[in-house]
Image (cartoon, rainbow, N blue to C red; front, side, top):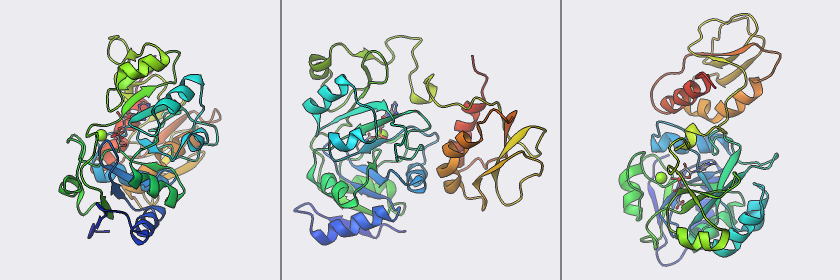
Length: 324
Ligand code: TXA
Ligand code: MG
């Protein structure tokens, strides 16, 4: 769908605008909107295909996990496991420019693709009235990375968003310039000590005053730097064999396209019709479904190396890499 629509709401969001934007999101479309930090590229976080479309629109070469936006702490607690530190930070900084990385609940409805296969999820409660109204109207958590092409700076006006993404999104809500102008601070609470993953709109000193010293990402040279390298990053227990054009005994098959080779103990399709966006949407769930002890390995058919296929192949190569 073409972004023929800039919904101008600098003055105030009309009920008709809100209904329209919410309906687009519920239908799986991408809608960019302002937050107090930067403009976000929003999608229904519970819809695998919509989340995959975010990566495609941003032309991200890898699946970085995304920040999911919810209305309040109670909504957050339905998606992730809170501990005492999370409760303190949520009460002190939400709504506002702080994102918390916490363990997903077992029945968390957010797409695994938004977590990039991790067992954790980054959540934030925005303060800006516009995304707040939108989250309420959609009634679902909204995944929203910054609304720029991969590798470019984050947009702080609707014009920036259109410069980057026109033609790739259904609409942008124009709420004027962002107040904070840098992304939210990201704090990882999945380990024994809180860890600063990204400095941002909430001051590290204020966070430390609330929960004690923050470990700094990168301070320890042996520490993982990016989520893709995290030890906790989901990798199947079974070995993966990439670029498989035939199936060997005991293998399950991760298939792409209409004509998979025969002989697999079980077949899961990334996409029967060979659609890369659909394949990305199914990737993590399909890997998990095939990762069972009755199989010897997972054979993966070749995935075209273009568009979002780059990110799929990056993730598959990581999952197939030798492990310690
Ligand atoms: O201010 C913001 O946070 C903006 C607005 C739109 O809310 N959003 C934003 O999202 O900057 P994004 O997707 O561009 O940034 C996500 C950051 C990345 O640095 C990513 O690595 C980290 O959060 N992150 C997300 N989920 C994570 C997880 N489960 N574990 C570790 N890091 C995570
Ligand atoms: Mg970004």
